[in-house]
Length: 320
Image (tube, rainbow, N blue to C red; front, side, top):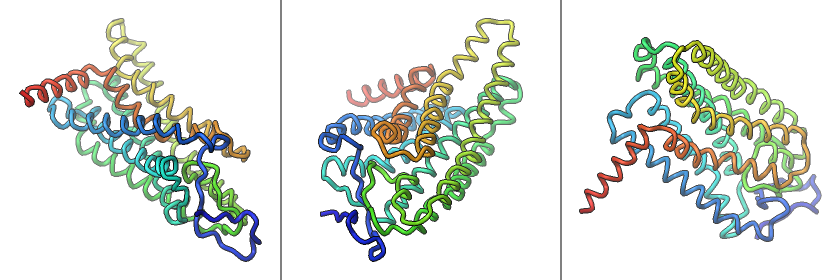
């Protein structure tokens, strides 16, 4: 059974594990949420694997836009898998205990994958900017070499820059409470249990958010502003419609992704007691984009729909 340290003298004990209580205020029936969360997780894994198979099997889809989409699919699966197995274990098996190293590792993985998703969105925005504003130079600018370098840069940027977040969290002194009113280890949620000053953690996370994801968002907005300016100069209504349709699916996903990031950041900075809505938003932000991204792209991209139809036809022929 998990051990609670609420009533223990904080000067004599050092917490060795945390207890993830789940969603605040609905502990008695939160296990019923395992069904929709399981469906979202299976959808995220299944649809992203399907996207990767379609891109791999169809040579016409080995273009920069779809290669970036394939990279986004890998990141999405990593993000969803970082949190969902533990959440489902809490609901199904009451496995609420998580060791400090596991908790800090989850903090690192969440920040790393969220930052990489933001970076891939930036790469995709730049791809659309070049395709629409400089179509004749597109193939000479957006090359496989550039895609590889951009991907490696995003992996290294987020893999290295987020290291201070779990390191600072691990250096706090957890000598009293060890119950977290959450389904996952969020940095500010964990460090709120520390007996010493947690301001370095809050400042570090704020700086990383502004420098990393803030700069990504600023460059994405700049890219689409330049795209919109270029599109509005076109004389053909059909060309304008085609250009805007190409970007619409990307804009839908970006709007959802960054809106939830801002809401979560504001609720954390307010340092209010954990309530259901912010915690639910935090979990949804890590599972809905991975399940939503491939569906939105598949529904709004003719080439992906065609690739999906080809895959279904090939499977049906194999079965005969």
